[in-house]
Amino acid sequence: VFDFLGIRLFSRNMAMREAPAVFSALAGVDLFGESDILWYDSHYEGDSAGVKDLLYKQAILSGDRVPLILTDDPVELWRDSNRTAWIGRLIEEDSICGDNKEGVCNMKDHKSVCWVQRVDFSPHVLQDKSIPPGAYPGRYVHQLKARKLTMLLLHALDKSLDQWVDGISARGFPLSDSFWHIGVEYTKIREAVRTNMHKDSACDNMMGVLNATCHVEMHGISEWLPRIIPYATSLRAAVQNNMVLKDYYIDEVYTQIDLMPIEWAIPEDQVDPHLIAISTSLLPPCSERIDGGDDFNDDFDPQFLTDDENILEELAELQQPSTENNGTHRFLQIEATENFHDLDRPGIFAKTHSQTSNFQRGTADIESSLTPGQGWGMHGLVPGYCDGTAQSHCNRINVSTCLMAGHNDFKAGLIGDGLSGWLLFDIPKLEEGLIFLRADFTLPPESNPFTEGWTEINNLEKGPMKEKTKDSNNADSNKNPGRLEDFPKDFLFEFSINDEVTTLSHSQFMKFGIHIEDKLVLYPLMTKGERIDTLSIGVRISSQFGRRVTMLVTHLYYA
Image (cartoon, rainbow, N blue to C red):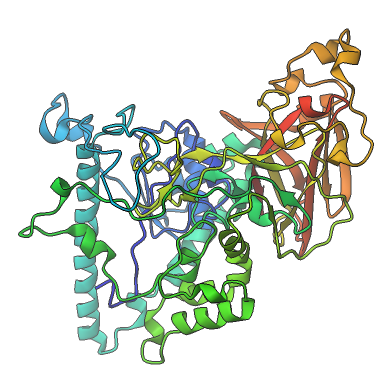
């Protein structure tokens, strides 16, 4: 039925260990991706009410879809949406199992392997027998949850088909749009959330002076994983074209599909639900197929990857629906082709030039008058395509002892220090005039390898760095900054909006950040609440102690 209607199934696990969902939820649907069903299982996460409230509201406010939200804790969403939001509850497995820990209630029974022997690749190091259980739930937990969701959807589909049959009987063929077009419902729910005046909501209380994020469509880019379309949603993709990032790309040790143990094979007399789920006659949207680090589809000819016009021509040929089935293709498939330059051109450049570890963006709309920094690069980057799906391939590195682990949860960033210079971004137009930076200042001194041996900013112009040996009696030089409050008193944080620079001293910057949740402090670069069509953003830190002050940029949010 879904295939006939032109619908493809994409399922993602977007959870991150030791990080509340607010880090990605603040970006609207840019990092999590749009969804028709958002299933939030808080049993293992422990997010606050404010985090959950923000997640639900951004899922509704952002993107084109409004999802059905399945959760055991909807907070006040029913009230704040004027009783319009689509909310469903699934019974927790604990209520089924109670104290029973046997059979399907054995929540710690894992079934995993780290490697299956193959002829085309051999690991560089000895592989573990299985993935360590840790705090992860067992396979029966996943099966139980998956089957509950499956039964829910099957019943819903059955009910929907009955309504369509009744609709045709009542109003004739073809089926009236009112039975299956839900754009009007989307608008009603979204407007109810956007205009709700309950400023005492959990989201408003958590965000404080930045509570506009609970009522407007947010966007964001990051280097934390998993992310939908990982390159297009990265900080790297927004870096201005005149900057060079070091250690930009890492190759996987192998790119082939993982082999499953033969004993896991579905018996021939049983139904294979996965095969049914992925069965389709449709090509995936272009934005789902083309991205930095992704394996290209066999339908694509690598000869055209360096020619923009040929790229668009071949994509258009592959994606353009025929006149007979024009109404059955989701608009996202066409949109992905039309917006191809905006989404993934830099990703193709990275893929076809993976032999170099440095990257310079080839597309930018704004020329900044600020001198681009030469001392910025990637920190914590992992190879692969980490989009949260079961088909993802992530962190296949030569020292891994469990290449088939498949975890997508990794936290990277752009690292710089007092000698790195300006980090410059291009950001799409702002509707609300909001820009927030999230950065980590807890890395040890001199942990940026890209400025090693430098004594001047950008290794070119004269800088005010002090030689540590010359000031051994200075109180600041004896400190070992690993916390922002311990940075030298001459530390400066600067940011620019369209080349208008604001400089904050150490004491000013300490008061500038707004604490939202555990490990999340936001630095509001702009809160003007106005529309801006073109935007160039720059950040840099400086100190006469140079490499001893370090900043790791991980997220940039805007609206």
